[in-house]
Length: 427
Image 1 (cartoon, helix red, strand yellow):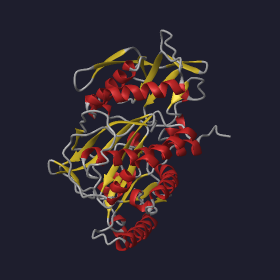
Image 2: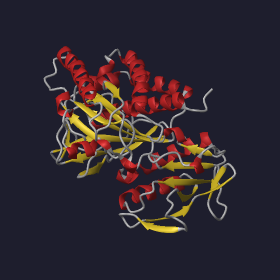
Image 3: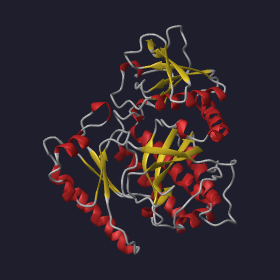
């Protein structure tokens, strides 16, 4: 399923990459079909992309997407069809699903995401109830989302190798919308029900560097198909462990890793005549919400951080200490919405693109992390699902977003590889 025809006003330089993707569309779709025949797609996911004109690449892959409320409501038929396809593969006889949300019951916008997700699942023909891991939820509790929608969360219970609710609600499918940053709860271990995504997709186990290891393989494979340098769709990265930002342990090694990676990026910029200054993003190897992230142009910037900077890098969601980081090639974003810096985020259910939005930040620059307080979202609106316009310009809306969908599906495929490689039960 291609990216829908988006009517959003776009700016950005013409990519030779987009031209190649458009020309190879039949081969690309055939290649994806063969890949999905061999690898199971995660139930859902969202991909943060950056488009610098000379490079279009994923910079993050979320397996517990929390922004369904930011999508244009027009995307609903696509999401419902994709959900039906996913459920038919996993549990064809499923009549109901137990959805486990994040614990932050006071985040009204997150609750709006939950309400949207419930609506998608219900439209796909499933009865949906919410079971909470939050110890403060001891009885059915009605919560109000930012738009006034209500959701009822209930305490989760365990019986044998199944999780259920107090009145015996006991479906064959359990869907996590909780990224398990705080650890793997015993109540979810060794279940006989279909738990999606699996426990090892949670941030207690998962590492961004594992994902990008897998993406290296996918990008190399795909680039042969298009006869391009994989670098055009793949950010360089290195991992750095043994850090303690509070005590400055590992500071010099981290700075050296940054400088080595910047030198590697600069060589590519020189090779292709790119007149920009290389930079890298240093971020926690596990975790979400844009916490523990810095954009730097030299290792020197990481030596002698002040207390505020060290505190920012030292702890992420759920108060977890950061000892491992990914040092990732920074990809400029030259896209803007109403003159504010923007980056596309693409949402998928099963292996289908179902919509997306621009993450926009009026206070951030083209080299900075936009997933930060002050961001807002502009839905990618579309008229109807359509194929790319192969007679149109490579950067016209359906073609630009077809390219985004291709790169996003590569990231989803890499996540499938990653989950296979890290599966503790794999033989």
